[in-house]
Amino acid sequence: VNRLRGIGAARGYALGPAFHFGSGDVRVEKHPISDIGHEQQRWEHARSTAAGQIQAFVDKARLELAADQAAIFEAHVQMLQDPELADRVRRNIAEGKWNAEYSVHEAFEHFAGMLESMANGYLKARAADVRDIAHRVLRILLDIDVSGAGRPNQPSILLARDITPSDTIMLDRHMVLAFCTVAGSETSHSAILARGLGIPAVVSAGPEILSISNGTELIIDGLKGEILVEPTPDLRQEYRARSAALRSAEEQALTHSRAPAVTRDGQRVHVVANIGSLEGAHTALEKGAEGVGLLRTEFLYMERETLPTEDEQFRTYSSILKVLGDLPVILRTCDIGGDKALPYLEQKHEANPFLGVRGLRLALQHPDKLLRPQLRAALRAGSGHHLRIMFPMVAALEEILQARRILDECMSDLARAQLPFADQVQVGIMVEVPSAALLADRLAPEVDFLSIGTNDLTQYTLAIDRTNPQLAYLASAFSPAVLRLIHTVIHEAHKVGKWVGVCGELAGDPLAIPILLGLGLDEFSMSPEAIPRAKQILRELDSQDCAPISQKVLEFASAAEVKSYVRSQLPELADV
Ligand code: PEP
Ligand code: MG
Image (cartoon, rainbow, N blue to C red):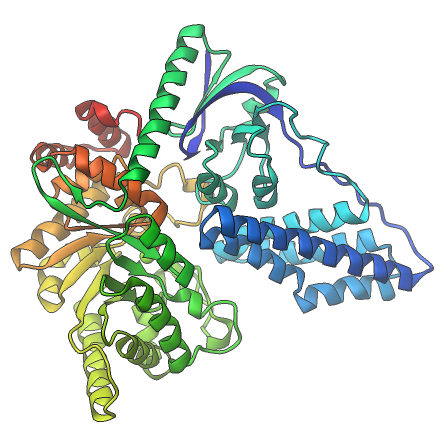
């Protein structure tokens, strides 16, 4: 048996024949035209057809997936409607007198190229999205039917160089057992969609997979990131059993998702959700969240031309808090900067935006524009609810004191104005920067709680840009360096009677749950989809058994050692 390795991007197992997937290559020819009106019509028609097709993905994603996954396609619809892009196509036809196909190709490539050259990792990655859209428009213009070509006619494991978001959502779920790509990263849009659709996926598996012939039997392990070529009957048997066990565990978890998570030794663990929209609030409740551990508010600021007003924010927060009733909700003030810039805020160019004016730093630079309106809106919306407020990207004590002073002023202003507001809010900080973790003993006394953002804490501890796919293989929150910082934060905060949550991806990772439980974590906050399983795992664990495991992993040198040790100590988690 030949074993190939990549990155496990969506868990689950698959056994079946290989199939080389092609999204139908398009060849674009350039030729002069005489009937400009006709070409303009062809372009307009292709554009509106494409917009209709993508809108259907939005609806499909909304029904079948989470809101953030639908947002991937909403952004595609918007890109297609971008006036500059459409103008460029029209000008190519009218002035360049080129055929619609070439005009589209030139304009979209121009935009993709522009994005690709940007320093900002998030925007860079969007070049793939622009090309995905161009591909769709071109196929419509060239009348290339994508439903048949390059698609399997029996349930198969798809192999491809790369898979675009629209390929992923269009794939017939019954024909796709798993997919495996040469390139890609865990955080690419396709990987996010695969996880949402429950399709096991291995990405970044290297060009070797392209030499596997169609029909070759494969096993895909989307957890370990393994591809087993021509497995023996014994191996097949083993994987079938694992796959069945995984399915029944998932069904079980969903049945009990609303019940509390109590460990074997009787410890009640709070499991809450990370959300970023009103839809997210509904999903959170459906999946059994006991509150919201992270309400990301950036969505209110993105994809618009002006700052959201206090009243607009008040309405949005109120609608979300209303869904959650009296459950605790941690609203995080906006975390703009890093890979999320606001065109209307005149942010100066920064060589290293992730090390720049981001999160609370930005908010404190614009207290009247950003921080006050948001805090006032949150406090007003929090009246009658269980609101908590948290500041992102804190690196130093001064920042906390400054933010708290502004919060106090907002409260006095609201009281003077006799507006109803939440006057009993717990105030916390995110621990995402190593300095904040190392100073936990000094920072904890100033706040009510600390919430560790392991996504950023990992990036800043390991010096790995979280949007850089080339380093994805090294960027693990299981690194003992990150775990030691988490340990420090929990230990120091508990000493002064403050509680600690984790709201980074790590909290929902089944293999991390015993470690975090053993370190004494109070609150686990994760994407709603991860909740049923996390609760199920917590119910199977004994915190007394987990404590020595957590202490032991702090002594290791690598993330790989940490993971294999946890697997060896808790064989019941071997499959997670
Ligand atoms: C984190 O950094 O872990 C976190 C939860 O915040 P975000 O992913 O929004 O940066
Ligand atoms: Mg963060």
